[in-house]
Length: 570
Image (cartoon, rainbow, N blue to C red):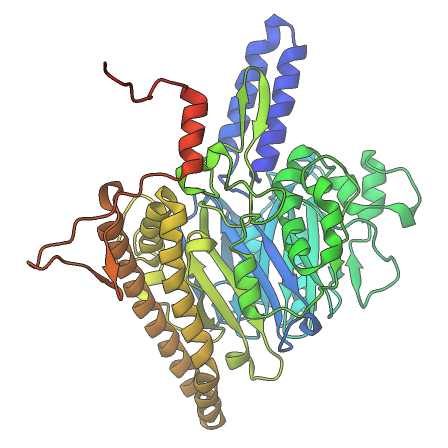
């Protein structure tokens, strides 16, 4: 269950407390606390979706940021495997590790690297929570297990929808409401799903295909409004998705008027400002007409944005990577220049999302790029290549704004040490872990953002540009090998990716060392041609002491008056 559901839950608790008599208030508070501590530690995520005719080269794309303060970033891997009839698969909740039950194992599973399998099928998600009474704590299939089990069993997006919906029908749906991005080289789908409560095993759901020339996005709020009831090529849905809403009293109109989002995840301020705002920022950057929805993103109006739009231009891999690094720059939600940004124009604020001053509640923004990301990716699928070469999971650890997206081909068979499960954890630092090295650098960048982010982006851009530049040559070699031996091509690409990860993490460690030397103690070392300067006697040249900007000094004086004024002594 996402943080928005926790916030909604807390609001509901406060309202209950305010309406309770003193004799039952203690029981309400205790119940609230138990509910809060039993909720998984998941936080908001963001997905962007791009059809093949909306991309510059005919690729389909989906992206995903797995955002949680409790998630350690690793590259998951399940090798293809055959099983005997009757074998069972134990299911553990992805967020917490809690054992949920077991289901029959498939006789054949596919190779899965991260969130993409060997057939170029990729799946991402965001939690929208929705109606709390529809969570089934007795079920077996949570949203994370649903993703990774499906990737091991399905060959394409439509098959994935069938597998996912059948799994929850057979074993129940454990999680709260979820939006899934599901894509293969030809089709991109968004599927939204929510359980039916402990008395009704299964889930209600709707899946809509994004037109090839369009883009979409979702970010922790259900987005499917009305949908076609007689177009199975482009829309699939549970037979009871409308009748169940009627039964529960969520909907009373004609079938054609039914909105999945309105019925199962009604809007509130948090859904708009913390969630839909991220979708709006992406839409606004690729389609000029979307500027008119700024008040919707600000939580001032509720007229919903379309599920998908046609971009003004075709989008490249680099475009999507950069969109995952968005902080609302240049929009009405840009927060780099108010007092909260500090002296170095930070686009970050530390949790929680809301705070109270003099009994008035306020909020922080929640942009796409955020400090609590465990991992993120841009999945690229290309129909004109064999699957093992066509599918690339551009994978990065930590905050998308400070990560490097490394190319992991979908046939990948050997996880690099730097991304391997067990190489460190949230309580164990490791100098060979990409997650820890990137977090180390990020937390330096946060402290002096306007200066350090400029240095960081130089290395980030150089590495990612080198990957894109070398890609055609590498894939040409892989194709040559593939014509002789599929396994040799896979081995070649696996070793190539692992080498890039190893070298890239080493470069990022050097970046951290450089930032430490350059900015230690609030001064700035002088440089010339990329080398720190020394004086004529070989000693380090005295550093610059730039202090803060004039704008920030003015803010200090406005707040403190003459407190720090230099006085003239007579």
